[in-house]
Image 1 (cartoon, rainbow, N blue to C red):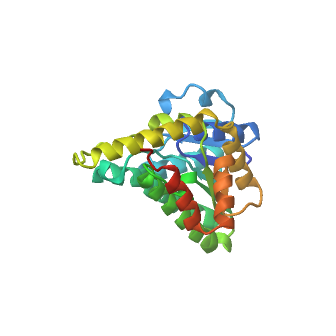
Image 2: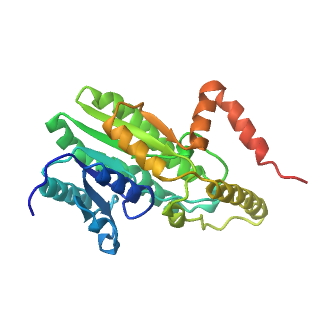
Image 3: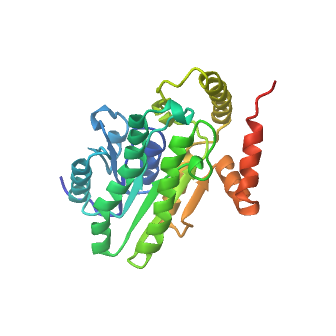
Length: 279
């Protein structure tokens, strides 16, 4: 196939949710899009769009990452931005997660994103320009009950992104994060609850706390704003001058504002009080 001119973005986890919306946004804005996913043959929408190619990419497999980047550059003649969106979540009290489940979430959400960065940075350094957007979460700004493991992966991604933003700025490479709050996307379908057995003494408490958290999460998603706001913010981060950290949605923006206006402990105290059981 003939190489196409213009700017090109590679997006991980583009089969659904924020990833698919972001691919559609960039395509509509005239960009070439490498929409990557673990099973590209299942996509029936993105492949119909001009200047969009779906490539296989599993962020937990370095060879898969390198192959997708090479195919993208060969197809479009270059690569100018990467959006690390692939991820999965899980809810539960800490002891309800097995070591394997915890490590699996870190492998995708944190180490997978780092592997994509490691693979693309030499290309960006060679051309003296490039943008990396790491999609984190409101849970990467402040954690809460039943979201601790997921939050830990996103806190880690926020932390390394802040460091990389400083390290690579003088090389012409921008690194930033987009932290969505509650949005109704297919991401929620991919969430997995912890499955480890916990002792009988803790289980009633864990079940009650999980029920409270599930109810609140359902309420948040029921009134969630248009998820295209996230895609718009990601496009803005790639094409305009933005801060390193970019919360999206009223809840994420509200938490970010609260963290800048009060001691962090005050916010944690408020959250803790809101989860106290009624007698």
